[in-house]
Length: 256
Image (tube, rainbow, N blue to C red):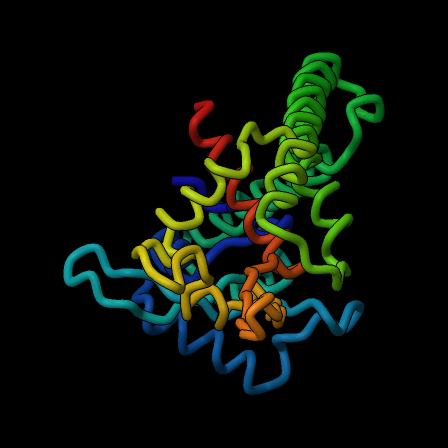
């Protein structure tokens, strides 16, 4: 097990590891750290935002219960280890300092661009990683582009449209679906009422509560003097964005 680890881009060790290396009871190491903290020794005076000790937890391998431990950087370890004595203590301290220095070097090189690394092997390894990351980002951007373009187009739209117009909008975004198929999809997914009757193809209570539809009501006067009310479901700006993104996701899943 490595005595030093990279945590959030900082070289650290733990109270558990220190206790194991120096042959001490973990509770005693915790006590020593907390005594340092009580005396104001937990802060890096050169950088007040950087703590020498940070509380964490670990799961005990036997009872699987969670217990307290501490992470510490090189300065924190140096402060703690000042009081450690014994024949092997000095060598352990030197081993830790060397390991801290090595990890800090690795972290520094990891944060450098490939052209800044002098070692040719490490420079090549970093360059390969950079190319892989660039390729991955480009792929993710391509996958997100249809969604991003559409979201930008309708995110602020206050105009409601017919379901048939939503089908046209879907086609413009690369979704192969016509008005009839879209009506079927909306019914099958519980956004429009599917039972036959006067409310057939009307928005369900769920989709109305989600703000996906408005209902346009039009009074129609017939030749015999009767007046009836015509109801037409119209997709809101929020609904347009919601349905197109959902259809894009469904299409992407189907292509896998």
